[in-house]
Amino acid sequence: MKTTIIKVGAIAAVLAFATGCESSAALQNQVDALQTKVAALEAQVEGASSGSGDAAAAQRSADQAQACCDATNERIDRMFQQSQSK
Image (cartoon, rainbow, N blue to C red; front, side, top):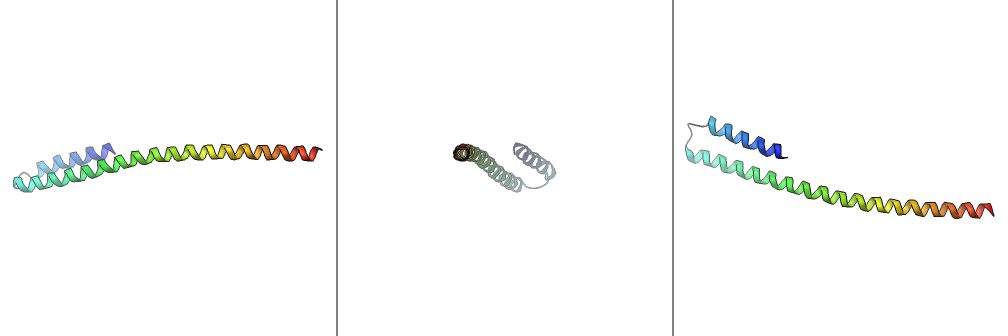
């Protein structure tokens, strides 16, 4: 995502050079628009980072639940084997 921010900055630089004949007010409007887009992208990156932390926590919970389930199944199997051997 940081590369996206860098790309947006590069595009802003190209626009600044390409629009040399435009008024400074129009150029400032373009820069402001690009800054708004960059801020939105930064918020998306932050949200994605937060989401990956939530996903990792959910995965840990699922792994713990699976381990508990496996242990319960092993106990049931042992009880069944013991009842069959008698």
